[in-house]
Structure formats: structure tokens, C-alpha cells
Image 1 (cartoon, rainbow, N blue to C red):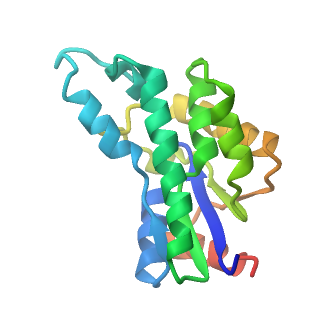
Image 2 (image 1 turned 135 degrees about the horizontal axis):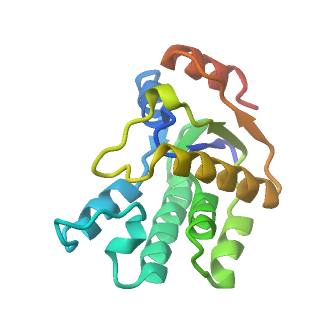
Amino acid sequence: MDFKRIVITGAPGTGKTSVIKSLEDRGYYCFHEIIRTMTLEAKKSQRSDSVLSNPIDFVDDSLAFNHTLLKGRLAQFQEAGNLKNDVLFYDRGTPDVLAYMDYFGQAYDVEFKEICKQYRYDQVFILPPWEEIYVQDNERLESYSQAVDLHIHLEETYRSLGYDIEEVPFGTVAERLDFIVKRIII
């Protein structure tokens, strides 16, 4: 393998999207988060008067939804082999699926964990919860306290799979971007 796979992860509302956009502006190839589109599609069948914090609550079969999400992230992982970039960034990795399923108390079969073990990223950066920038929206359904709990689940999941995680400090988007770029292991 002649390239590095780097995950940018974190709970909702931590600034990941801004960092990913800035990485792209600097010429890095980034695989985008796919759950926002999936959540919007799932919400179309939701009653307009219901208020839910778990995107899985919008679907009839949560295991199938998560399986589709995992397969989508796996497809991104596999697509990287067709690219000619030295460094590839992922807005969330396959272990994020496990972290969210654990957080929401959802069971999963052994395939979920096996995919996460088999398809490994080279580096993981996590953006911590940051209350000052946190905003809920149509796709970001979690409260700030739920985001803090999800952060803990993300850390635990990646560490349980043997990853060293680097926490990106608070700062401007440029400062956070510089922190990440300076720590890329080539």
C-alpha cells in the first residue's frame, strides 16, 4: 500500500465537516460522511410531529440500516485502492458504526466487528465535543450531552480495535487542520 488512510472522527457538532472541507481546499482527497444522506432519506417516512434523537428510530429495520451504513463505509475503504493519492481522509470510519450501535444499545452480528478488524486505517484523529460550536439541525439530532457520551463511545470503540487516537485540540479550523497535517505519519 502506497497511501495512508486517515480517519477524522468525533461526535456530532465537533467541527469535522469544516476540517474535512479545509483538507479538500488544501488538495487532499476526502471521503465524505454518508449517514447524513441516509438519515434524510429515512426521515421522509417519519411522522412530522415526532421528535427523535436516534436516526435508527426512523427506519423499520435498524440492523439493515446499519449494515447498509457499514457497507457504504467499506466501499469507501475499498475505493481508495483505485485512487492515486498519498493520503486519503475519511469523514468517519467503519468503527464509528459500532460505536453508535453500542451507544444506542443495538445488537450486531460478528460481521460488523470483523469488517472493522480486517479493514484498518493508518491513523485516527478525533475532534472532542465543543459546546461553544455545537448546533442541532435536521440531520444532527443528538443533544450536546448525547454528543459527549458518543465521544466516549467512539474513543472506546477505536481503542478496543487497537487504534491510537490523536485528539485534535480546540482552535480555528486552520489551527486544527495544521495540527492534523503536521502529524500525518508518512
